[in-house]
Length: 271
Ligand SMILES: Nc1ncnc2c1ncn2[C@@H]1O[C@H](COP(=O)(O)OP(=O)(O)O)[C@@H](O)[C@H]1O
Ligand SMILES: [Mg+2]
Image (cartoon, rainbow, N blue to C red; front, side, top):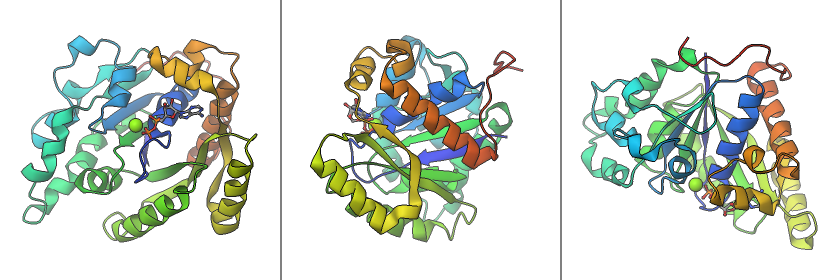
């Protein structure tokens, strides 16, 4: 049964999409089956991962609007075997106006209920969010077992974590099973004094909440994204590969209570 993890931050450009697609590939290399759900109207994850963009007919917007629509009709292959995706589209922004969650609170649970029908086919489901706390975020976190707060080592990060904390604090009333996996520092440039200073500050403030893995700055990660590649597809010798492998092990350890193992059987998404 899949563990569903949302990646959330109210600040944009903190590396959410980058983490999701590279972590997905690292986990796939450990034999895990992954479903990505893009709920960001910027659709960066979809743009970078969908194998055949022209084949996309239905998106997460259709899935959320149409109660009867089966999840399978919205799932597409990515260019990483064993990783699939429910893409996003700009129109998802309309959801806020179209959904009347006050008079029909059950709509808030629609994503959770739909994901439930495919959970047995995956090990991990990752939800990419836009930088906001709104109806879409609420639907995602109701559907999630866990969440990660990615941050870059910059001055706004602590503020962003505080806002997420307040928001998630209210959500625990609706989803009491929701658990934080941790705050994940990414794009960390160990050569700069500012980054070091901020890391020390974060350690003092939220030390026990920081994930053990830190994703360092690696320009190849951006170069890979421009070519619609994961860091593993771009150049397997890059430092980013090891960083995402270590993160994958930490995720497995935290979610499954075991260290990751090299796969001995082929991934079969349709089995
Ligand atoms: N570890 C990293 N090293 C170098 N650049 C990174 C790293 N992580 C993210 N970036 C770059 O930072 C920018 C924002 O990342 P992105 O994943 O799009 O953030 P978000 O999804 O939170 O908006 C992108 O250009 C991305 O390539
Ligand atoms: Mg993004």
